[in-house]
Length: 133
Image (cartoon, rainbow, N blue to C red; front, side, top):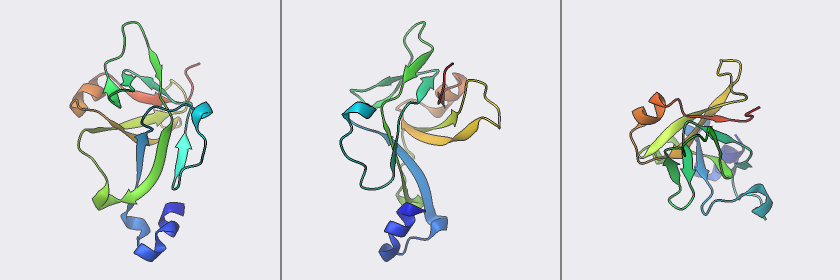
């Protein structure tokens, strides 16, 4: 809604705006952030389950052997017009509060970059978690 208000002069309709997310590149931690984003918010403290993150290529990769969770760098979340949203080479990653994946623990989906087919990540059960305890 805030992004929509910021683009009032461009006549953005709320129904045409979708949430988009992008991992900061180069990868940042919350300690290295200096300023707030010009638009949207930064989200940090998320963990990837079922895959890893390649900071150099800025994309999802196979997880390292015997490593269940990978910390995700800071995620920039904002809104865009649906027609401008990038859907190629991405995976809509579900995000949950805890490891137990139920409707009560579901938060939202976040778009993460991937060069692999979506089915690969679905079959591996990839998700973002707020807590791994």
